[in-house]
Length: 454
Ligand SMILES: Cc1ncc(COP(=O)(O)O)c(C=O)c1O
Image 1 (cartoon, helix red, strand yellow):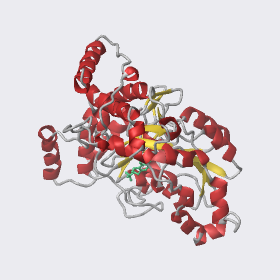
Image 2 (cartoon, protein in one colour; image 1 turned 135 degrees about the vertical axis):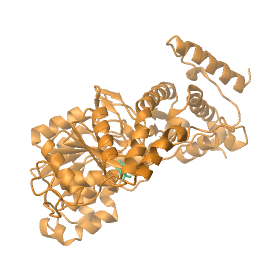
Image 3 (tube, protein in one colour; image 1 turned 180 degrees about the vertical axis):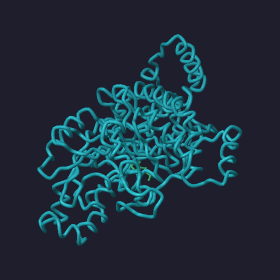
Image 4 (cartoon, helix red, strand yellow; image 1 turned 180 degrees about the horizontal axis):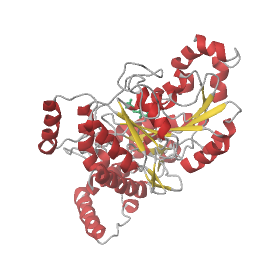
């Protein structure tokens, strides 16, 4: 049987048995010896497009957009409130405040926390600058707790080891859309009275024991930037169950004007708190409301595909799908992530593996480059600032010592071994699309020697 017929047969068989609730383990026994696309063979995905991202049903959604544009009410109004109400409801949170983007959601969450210069916040290092700007604005010190290289998430045991009398907060980042271990993190936070801001910017609808991420900590921050599972273009949201804190956040996002329990004269120009203006616009909210219509369905599909790939790809030495920690009941699969081990693939380099897979039509990358936040120029700039010099000793601001003290070996290992499938529409594909990913991996496994010799 030629390869294409084999795949078709398997796909049809899979569809048949899937209906009866049983999916066969066939990838293990596959032996796809066709020539690699990188070496002149036919790509697994020849002339096949992935699902597009973002998605827009023009016939259904354009009238809604036209309505808001023609109403000429473009600044924050009823659509923004409706979007916030729905996002709070879907996640099971008391309040949601929308913002212009995820970066500002995170910054606002820290700006309205009781954080001061000289305080420490324990952060997850597998992320980028947007996660920590707010901590730095407050003059606080990010302290880095290493990740678990199997889950990519901050390791609760490492958090414990970093706690001092100055620790005031924790920043878990549900990176790639896989949930961090929030029950363990919240246990530590309660014991030490720490403020927790969850960076859930990549983790829409991910769950632990049925509870959605972003609702465990004092605040949960989301991004609705174009690539995200809820895509608005730009947009952000903060979930919280604390009404007084929500009022302060509302005031903060609106020039510091009075709001709810932040008492003062309403509709004045009196700024009661040092603030910002980071309000979502009406047309952003309408895009969000349109996207929300499909989100749960898409989430289900991403999880079905994620579970399928986890099962099939686990059979291949050298690539290990990222694990959900025990208790995690759903990931958002914003990114489908794996760990690469070249020793188990005859020493084939990660770059070569990615090159070969990409040639087969599977979009894959290494993820974040090896550039830890604790060594970035932004941190050096803070250390040289007047405020940091006032509140920290010269020894604490010795940048080389800071880097050494915060060095996270598992993070570095992950930078050098991660594989990311990060293209919005891939995880919304059909079973046949998922089989293409498995088949491409299978093909590479069966051609490792040839690939290495090129
Ligand atoms: C982990 C993480 N944190 C924060 C952000 C910032 O969100 P935004 O791009 O909406 O400002 C993003 C998204 O870019 C993110 O992936």
